[in-house]
Image (cartoon, rainbow, N blue to C red):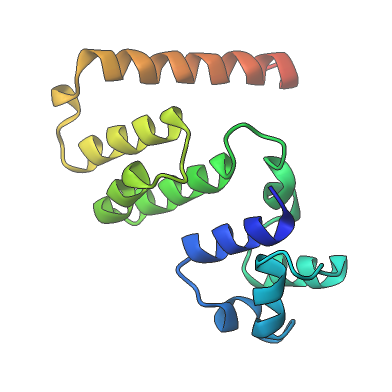
Amino acid sequence: MKIGEKLKMVRLSLGMNRKEFVKGVIDNSYLASVENGESDIRVTSLINILQKNNISVENFFEDFDSKYPLTSFYQEKVSTAFYNHDINDLQKIIKNPECYSLVVKNIAKLLIADLEGKIDDLPIDMKASIKHSLFQTKKKLKTIYGF
């Protein structure tokens, strides 16, 4: 994945047009050429665009070599949708082909069930998959951070 492609994916997932996304940083036509791979972007301009849109530089670059691009981005979208009680956004994430993470999609399904008061109605295999994912995450955190 290239920086221009990632910028476009992030911009579209935020539901923004080019002008809104880069307002006050660079020209939107220049962003188009970056997104299309025709031009490079200066590091300072990239950082300014990310900061303007409340995207951490670390999160932007986190999954560049990942098999599952934008996983952390979709994790954040799931959290935001849940805290806003936005079932519609959670359903959009589940259906989004750019979100490759089964864990993120299963958690979105779990949160929808929670918001609808139907957790007990989830299939047993989905509950098992979610528990397994959470267990693996807990193991990784313990290994990395010691807790």
